[in-house]
Image 1 (cartoon, one colour):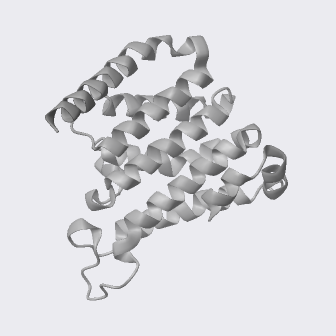
Image 2 (cartoon, rainbow, N blue to C red; image 1 turned 90 degrees about the horizontal axis):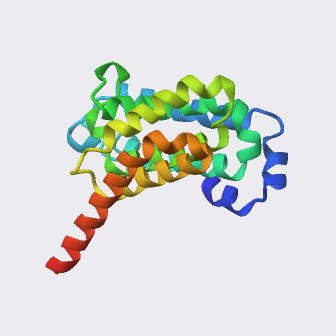
Length: 207
């Protein structure tokens, strides 16, 4: 619902919603608490609850996280002019997921939580937040961490198609925000995009 509403509002309209300064931190807090809950829950294979409560929310954590990340990305895009002061806090759960996906066991996220849908939504949100806060001085450290983690995913050839597409969108958002500063990242981003085109073409010929 947040994602759908945010996409329909103009910058002025969403500015009125966010003027209290509490909405974006609240969304980030819900994301962080959901990640914490998914990590501490007793899970079985594919993230489904194994405590006998098969209809509970534990098995739905990936879907909930994907929806929350999508909402975060939509709000960042719609409120780009207003989002920068909140970017450092908002990006924290994004970084936590990307660190876990890149093998950081201290991130505290179960592997079964890191579905393709969660990772794709996380990358899409990260691109929107990055574009909104690129020039924000206080965001520089988080920005560097985010870009580094995205680069670590680029060489992976077995990424699901939706994750690969979201990764390309991340670098597209970064290119628009960085302008000439994007030059050091151009070659690896283009190489990854070329590989994706080649894979898509080969798949089409095989049909």
